[in-house]
Amino acid sequence: DTAVSQTPKYLVTQMGNDKSIKCEQNLGHDTMYWYKQDSKKFLKIMFSYNNKELIINETVPNRFSPKSPDKAHLNLHINSLELGDSAVYFCASSQAWAVREAFFGQGTRLTVV
Amino acid sequence: TQLLEQSPQFLSIQEGENLTVYCNSSSVFSSLQWYRQEPGEGPVLLVTVVTGGEVKKLKRLTFQFGDARKDSSLHITAAQPGDTGLYLCAGERSSNYQLIWGAGTKLIIKP
Image (cartoon, rainbow over all chains, first blue to last red; front, side):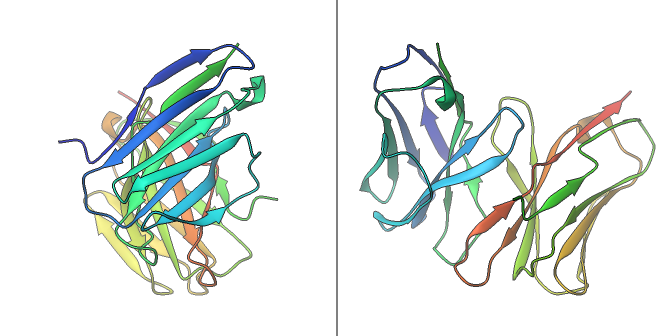
C-alpha cells in the first residue's frame, strides 16, 4: 500500500502548456505539502495545507495553484510552463500541523522543453 | 541564504569504513530530522532529535543533536553499499513549525 502517491511520475511538456500533478495520501494525515527539488537536490517548500486550508504559500509564481478537494488530496496545477519549472516535485504529508515528520511521495520529474 | 549547511556535499568510501556527515546552522531549531533519499524516490525519515545533546542510534547509524540545538551529526559505522543515498537534514523552526532543509550529502559506498 502506497502511503503517499503522486501521478504522473514523469511529465515532459512544452513551454507554455498547462499541466497538473495529483497527490493522494492514505495515512489519515491532516497536513500536506508540495516541495520542489532542483538539480542540486535542494528541497524547497512551496505550499503547506492543513485540513484543506492553505497555511503557507512560499514565494512561488502565481502560475502555480494548489487545490485540496479534501484532506487526502492535494493537487498542483501549473499554468504557462517555463523552462525553469523543470525539477522534481514532491508531495508529502504529516500527521498534523505541529508534527513535522513528513512522508514523501515518489516525486514527479517535470521536464519543460 | 541557506540556513542549514551540510558537509561534505559528496562522500565516496569503501565498504566497511566509518564516516560522519554534518548539518550546521547559526539558527536554533526545536527539532531536527534526518532523511535518506534514494535515486528516483522521495526522502524517507530516519530519525528526529529533539533535545540538545540527544543521541539516537539506528543499527549502525548514530545521530547526535548539538547541545545548543544548532547542529547535528550522523555517524555510520562499517558502511555498507545499502547505505548509499542522499542524506538530508531538516530543522524545525519553533516559531512557525516550518522545516528548513539542507542541500544534502551524497554518499556512495563502494563494495
